[in-house]
Amino acid sequence: KWIFHRFGFRYPGVLTCLHMLACALLGWFALTFVMTSGGVRRPRPSRQTLASVRRLSFVFVLSVATGNAALKHIHVSFAQSIGATAPLWTVVLSVLLLRKRYPIRVYVSLLLVCIGMVLCTTGEVNFNWIGFLAVLFATITRALKSILQGVLLSEGERLDSITLLYEMSKPAAVLLAIWVLLMEREVLYDPRAYNRSLWLCLLLSAVISFFLNVSQFLVTKHTSAVTLQVLGNIKVVMLIALSVAIFKNEVSSQSITGVALSLSGVALYNAENRRRRGGSSTASKGGGGNSGNSGSTGSTGTYISSSSSTNTISSSSTSSSTNSSRISSISIES
Image 1 (cartoon, one colour):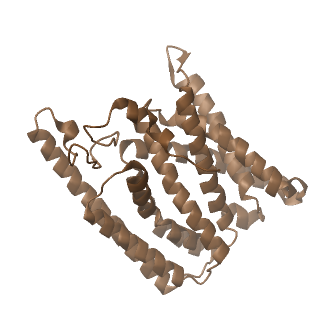
Image 2 (cartoon, rainbow, N blue to C red):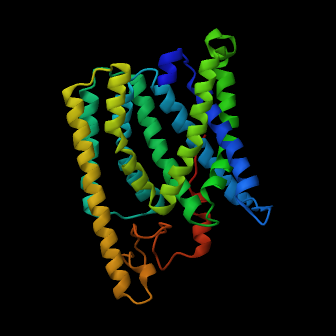
Image 3 (cartoon, rainbow, N blue to C red):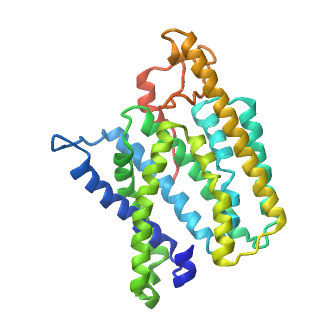
């Protein structure tokens, strides 16, 4: 947003494409020269896994591109307020696609987040329908992206964060380059696009995006897709404050109330997460060697165990071969 505002750079597709190119280059460097075993690079994932990664790339491009495009029409504060509903969408998609179950307290906490979003929407002084629909679509696809990357990181071949980012960023960069040629090709003739200071900021932003994506993958792998989205809401207050301080955006009192409600939902979710983690730990100690099934609700039921670093679904009727192909069953229509 600062790049758009400071330099009049109105090409979010170009910005996102640069981010993906940086992720591909830095990922290749890390895999080739840093993450090697005895000087030998790790083998590439299987063709089936790479097909799943390409689906993830498509969802990622939709999410980031529409999110950046929304910033043309709405303030950062409003975009972050709508994005606060990402945990709700993540739970809904997890239930629909992965057949997961959640305790009632989780739904209550996410309901608070959703009500807070409604207050932010109706109280926003910069409301714009195009921007609203774009950022809502970006939020839903971001939730889907978290679920897909969680499956790739914790099931089947269990890709590491760098490998997943590297393999995902290559097709994403190609898709974004096509988008730029179709929708933003005027950047080639815009004299503002050749500002040296602008390109320095663009490159810095691209490098930051690499480390941001790696950290997000790590959080997803060691917690869950829902937790990643809930933790993301903690940054809302800081971003709104920065948005007001830097861009002098006007934020209504109703929007502030909505943000407070959303953050209350985040706090309730975290408390429930800690309670379930403590319950899982107790069951693990008392269950002898059956800690892997402590989160199960039955022979065919599923339950999310937050104490598991892989966040797999506990079910005695699910085989390891099903885990490796789970993401393939989630179809994305282009």
